[in-house]
Length: 173
Image 1 (cartoon, rainbow, N blue to C red):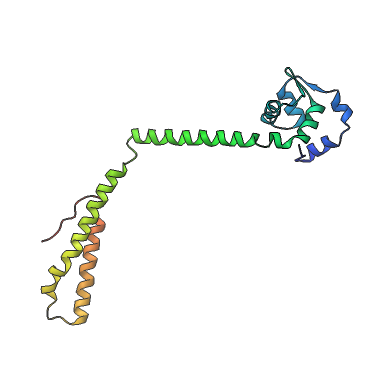
Image 2 (image 1 turned 45 degrees about the vertical axis):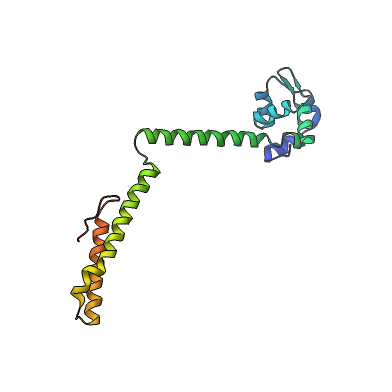
């Protein structure tokens, strides 16, 4: 175990004889003395560290084992991170289920149907413009035709903007 902060560096410089006599009564106590996570100690015990005798922990032996067996316990944090990620995903699924039950979500098929209706109406409005405008534009100058086209396009876009998604747009025929 590599020292991470000043406290751990100072503890690493202490004479080993002092630690040789110290036996922690529990993993929690050992984790507090060594300033590490209890999950690290559980991983060390599971990996076969001989410092664990019943519920007691020989600190000097544990420290030596941790320093020489870093690869054996390298993934202990990964497991906790994976468990946290799994819980986050479960919470997310539950929130989605709750929102669906409360009616806060709209199904993709409903949205697709409404959107197709809206785009169909918009398409029809745009396709009707030439037939509606052609007779009125005959004999006008280019500038007047352009102004009239802009006016009609603005009106058509305003009609599209006013209707909520999926509501039928009234088409003048």
